[in-house]
Image (cartoon, rainbow, N blue to C red; front, side, top):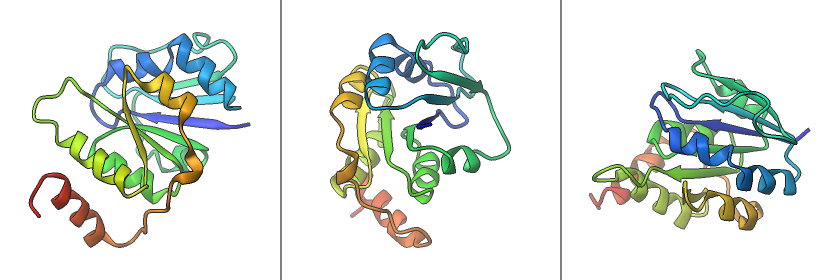
Amino acid sequence: MKTVFVTVGTTSFDDLIGAVTSDESVKALIGRGYTDVVLQVGRGSVVPDPDSCPGLTLQVFRFKDSIAEDMRHSDLIISHAGAGSCLEALGANKPLLVVVNDKLMDNHQLELAKQLQADSHLIYCTCSTLPQTLRDMDLSALTTYAPGQPENFASFLDKAVGLV
């Protein structure tokens, strides 16, 4: 069993849920050997049916007190680009694919994702490039983010938003 955990955090990001459950993304995930997808859909209006991704076992929920267990049991985390979700996923020491919401104005999330990708801690894409990224990504190139060093994450944030 190889599991993907997808999180939108406390927001709604229907485009991400739609992109992950698209035929193209499902084929890419199956092609990489994934068997299970756990979707945390937050406040979104897109709530896929458990049978909507043929070839994958799909579990869907809105919120839990903690998603740490879901992250711990996953082989790949696909997340929106919120700083809190990125930090939690990086702390779980799992491969992380961040999907930036390119519809946001003044997109600090893009800057954060770019910096963390430049430092080889994650791979980022947009909803429209997700299927291709799933096919082409090299998870072995990722390096571990050192947990327990909040000053490092603060430094990433400072660089990402242009404070340094």
